Image: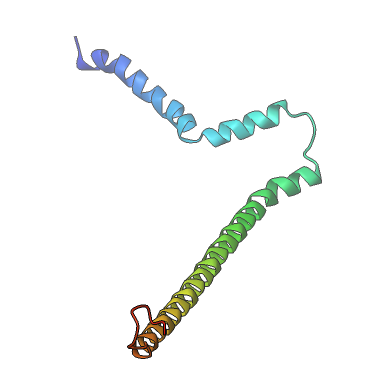
Length: 118
């Protein structure tokens, strides 16, 4: 028995695979060719326009919304930080005012009487 006879079935399998692999590697071509077979009408200009420009317009809209949200978040963060700084400054000013009033009230206390009454 020769070696070529034993390899014939294997060669036929190997020779068939590239054709099946080419269809697997390029499924979009199958779908595109199938779409042409069952559609009886030619595509309308409006449909072609939407098919062409829907994706880029959607990307632009999504990028614009993301940019707006990012700028809005940054603006509110800065505004919040400013409000917090203003409140802390006011609190420290009021605390200093309270300390000054307490210091002036202890120095100006009358020395006669228990409750400070005459």
